[in-house]
Length: 106
Image 1 (tube, rainbow, N blue to C red):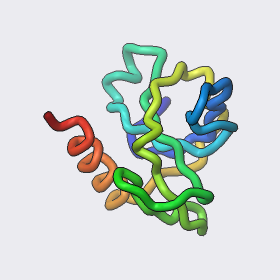
Image 2: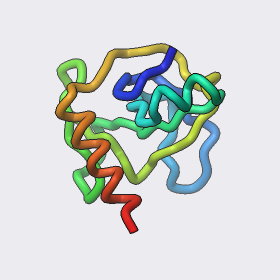
Image 3: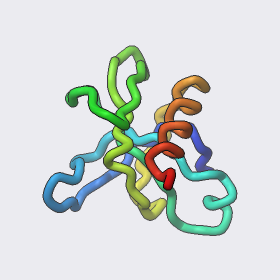
Image 4: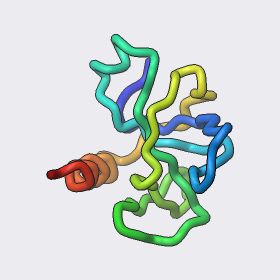
């Protein structure tokens, strides 16, 4: 049902403090093997209204310039997924996964 690199509209509320809010597009970064066995998915939100910063990946999706916010990565129950919006380009997914490796490197 859910695959890495797909963009889903996801309900992120409720939130606390500086966590990104609202129902917004998110990129799935967890591998398919997780989706087969768990009811959760790892996603990172997208936005068009934020400034570039370390660990934010620029992209164009559905004709809009935006950012993938790796500083806001979340694990969510699949019931928060509203609907599939599409997929990011292969180059964008590759940059996202490479940057995540950097974020979690020791």
